[in-house]
Image (cartoon, rainbow over all chains, first blue to last red; front, side, top):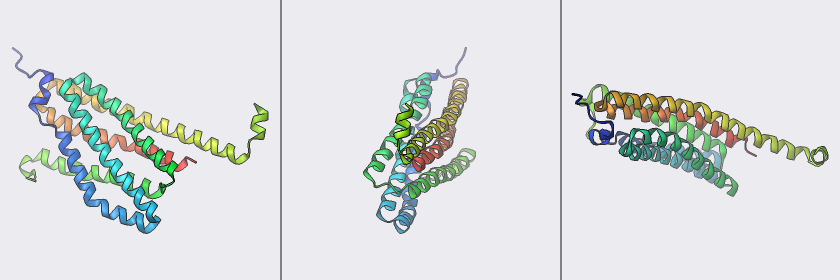
Length: 146
Length: 85
């Protein structure tokens, strides 16, 4: 007899790990936020500060939204997961584009600090998190308690 | 059509071409990550179907893989923002 768990029981077997990762990423984004905000303020004035803040918020919301979509879809089925991830990718890009175009139309967007903060934060936080995840997956005993 | 183009100021034409280039660049830059995310998720689903007990680890790796792949689309997005008139 096949005693493997049915695929629709994935959610009951494992906690929403991606939500925990997104929470970690958001917490670390808050840690590094003052540095980016300061650079934006000193280099580009108030627009730079707002643009850096917008980029940080977009990165954090993007991670949290992506994780929420995966968690919700995994509770439904594996097929829903596939569709939701790909649909979510397009939807999140569209949302990000819409927000930035609106802010740009208002005239508050300083493109250079926004671009720097968006890319550096996204890649930097991911590299930081993946280092932590790799360590905890390889040696679960090293997993931090808080 | 040619008359309309001839009456258009050179600056306006340049702005229009910039906008078209920015939109095309963003669209093309989003294709690669779309294919990449499809590959990542497809393989993750295959792994979860074969070994449901490893779903947590697979989903962790999948989420990070998706986020890394998405960085390519963000680069396209940034170029779009920089080029937009």
